[in-house]
Length: 396
Image (cartoon, rainbow, N blue to C red; front, side, top):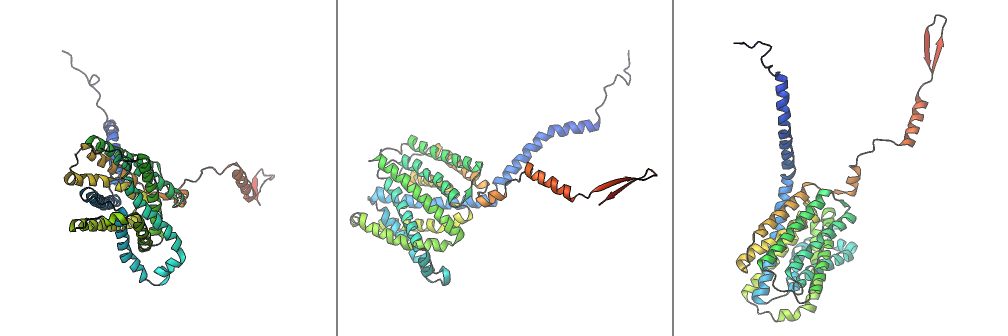
């Protein structure tokens, strides 16, 4: 029987080698955990949460206006979009224009009218016609076309923000917009599968053109609103839009909808629906500048893409819509895109320029000048040999 000697026994691994191997094995886990924590810290912030909540409040206001309008149209055959907008502008006039009238100094109503009356007239025309053309488009084209083509306003809004507000976007912003539009496409697909798309519209081309026009007008109005809210004041924007919007919508109402209003069979339910629409629209106009000031017009428009889904959920009980799981998927996709967009703030052109890394090289021409300057600044040195073979270095 042979006994294994010390030289035959397996050599134990040094403690340092064991620790190094364990550290190497745990490195991928630590890096993955750090990555998850970084994503969590970037996406789960108070700013994103507040932006998300504010955007959904706006969507609920839009949902209220859509449900009230649809109920008026389907149950009582009342199609008066200009009358409904006129009531909203009157409320803005009573609240915000009156507030401006009591101000003194350069921010008073009279001073604003003297300096910028024509600008606010143009803005009011854009805002009034944006509301009118979108609602009018439903009479000519399909619901699917309206939902899809209405998204045309988002790239228009981003382009206007780039040139007018000098906003600068990053790759993550374009990816986020693409994700949100994918969610809208999922919602439209769910509408088709659920059978909500029954008619083809009386004139699809006219309706589609109206949608594109309305989306572009909304983009112009939102960019103007962002500029005024962030550089001037929210009350000034709402007060001037209320003043001129009341005048313009009142004139257009008298021209295009006087006969429709005359045929309305008024009762307390119709009045209640008009009041509900007016309050939701007034809340939307009053609250949107607050959200835009915190975020931007583009992020607001991405957030309110869920308004159609809220309208659908109410329609399940009010109008007998069929439910589809794709609606929940669409909501989730839009929310993911919206959070991605808000995770990285946009910059102005000036901020983007200052944040660019400076070049490491100073260039050949500057390098030559620098060498010449150093050569001129370097003191001259002379070497002298004495008889004792000592070296003396004198600098002059």
